[in-house]
Length: 264
Image (cartoon, rainbow, N blue to C red; front, side, top):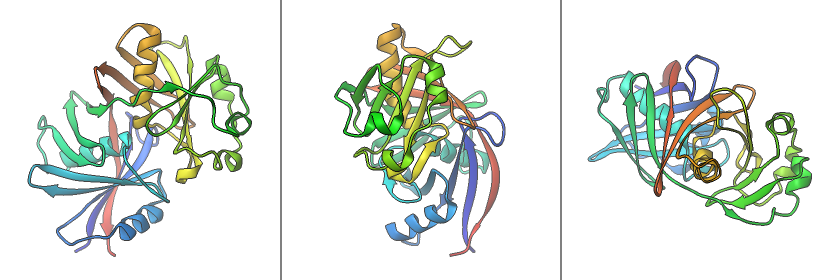
């Protein structure tokens, strides 16, 4: 028997929206980092999650097609969705994941999923060399988070029209670039996009980990802790956010689109 493998559209209420992630359920056979990286490269999605049952919950690791990452929201949401859908966990039992970013908890809520993640607020910083040229836009504000550069543009129109030079952006020394802007769109408090060509993902459709920085950023500017963000990629996706001290709650839904068996 091979390993069970699933594909889930995360931060989406219908198939082919949001951000697709692969979820691989591991057995007791040891698997090397090189093997997991090869599987992620084969899946060729922005993230592949590897989940294993352990004594106090589940271990969870995330790989892009080129690197392992320390924090990923949409693949965590996808992994939790799979565990409930196939009956490894019964709703409303929360999923507790042991990760490189500590314990992350996913809880089901009437058709959507709430993730309890660490906040990664941005501190003001000069843009790294080459960033503005690669983005093709002048920032209103620039900062650094634990993982990424955060850039605010003046309007959501400028955000939507952004067409980065990914060859140049790949040379900027960061995991990824979060670009955000204010908006007057109905039901939305802010918009964003996320680019990470140096991590093997030119543009990520919907990025949970980016909202760990976006939520505290916009909470401070808008004067409220509960916000809704829209990631304006081609697929698009909505993320509910709530700042709770050093933690951020991320809310979204998910749809399983395929299941199969990994034979190697």
